Image 1 (tube, rainbow, N blue to C red):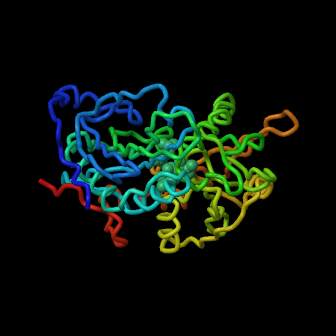
Image 2 (image 1 turned 45 degrees about the vertical axis):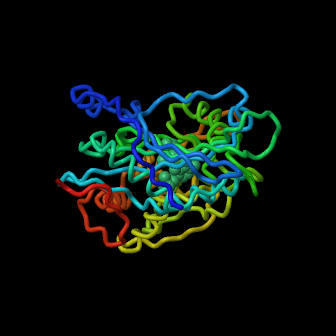
Length: 367
Ligand code: PLP
Ligand code: COI
């Protein structure tokens, strides 16, 4: 039976003045909206107890399994307000499917796609006042699931919590248009062959933080990882996929093949690119090729793509060689291809271009 995610507690809404203040300058989800979705899974009963209630702190005993072994997965998706006031999700069924692929990899229970979609639609609708209307602004949803047994043995959960929280979001990296610098690490890996790279689990991000700190120490806002076995092949950024564009308008991005998260933005970009005059080439790209071709001008542009970052141009790649920091500037940061792809994507998301692929899912009609 499907989960209704009915609203059960609604005593605590932020006042209109405070909300207006928050929406002016929300940061990247510095504030959470009034409600959250919740459901419980147990081995004996399956999924039950779905509800939407006021956002509140969770009370969990210190022995709760997720604190110790990190059996947890999450998703990231955005709700967009169009100029007529209507609000929309972007390809939410893709998030629902990826959530279940992550669940399988982390030995968590699958959540029926329909229930995932009900939870994100209902929460977005109930907290619709939190969906900003400013340029580049959105409401970011964070569905997640974790082991909620009170037990210290290393064993898959028999009790699991599913929640969805959300809040207003400005662009994740800079203002979304200013090129950012990226640290290319060959010291740390995000994941390895047959590891959890294709799953969206918290551990992947925790393990990447030390590299992110190293990058930040060199003025970089994200880290680009190479393959764990040889540190030869470019994989992805800590929270985004990676693409380059060559002088002859070829868009190159590495194949996801197990170690890289299958980004929904990446998939959308690869779908849009041929209609925008770009040839798509999904193939392994070595760090050596990347650096030398960027230096000789063969690779002109590079960008990060993901839900949080949309399409963010990359200005320079920095890396360490023989204890020396090397800098590789991209010849055309925010060049024509990046700009065109970015616009094609965000114009669909914000309802400024026709949604010919049927990617938008309506949460609320215009009033
Ligand atoms: N790669 C990683 C590691 C991510 O965390 C994300 C963000 O979700 C992406 C890629 C991009 O995925 P998507 O476009 O589905 O947001
Ligand atoms: C997203 O793009 O939704 C992510 O989960 C990545 C994270 C860096 C915010």
